[in-house]
Length: 160
Image 1 (cartoon, rainbow, N blue to C red):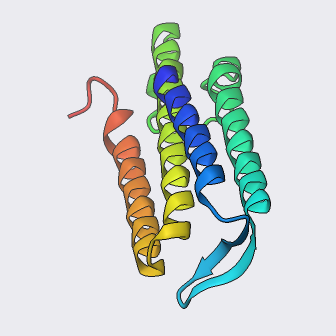
Image 2 (image 1 turned 135 degrees about the horizontal axis):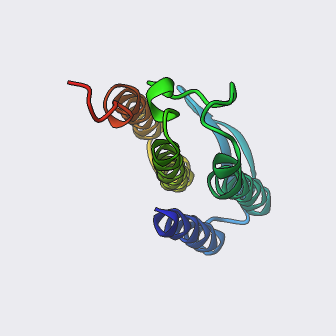
């Protein structure tokens, strides 16, 4: 899953490069609401902010997935995991849960990077309602994925 995440980071960088060449120097949408764009700025400001957002997300996801998850014990109060007692009962289960959480973190990170890439394009070129609908679909997808994680993915092997 780490490769999928880094591919999404490269996609995000490519989107920003293309937007640099496609967007006008001035008059770039920086924020849009229900009634359409309500804050405008320069291409440089837009790309700088979006690059900072992408860099921050990349560092956050990679630090959590590659360093933090493997260093925090499953039994720690910092870990919120369904069926925690079952997962922490043996070292093998704990290691498996950590691998699963790492993979899930990278999947969430990749989905977020793709979503932010799409929103960067849509806020510039699409009707505001298309961007808002896409944002709503993204939020619903995240909620659905979260429910699946909490109800199915981490269910103990011996559960019905």
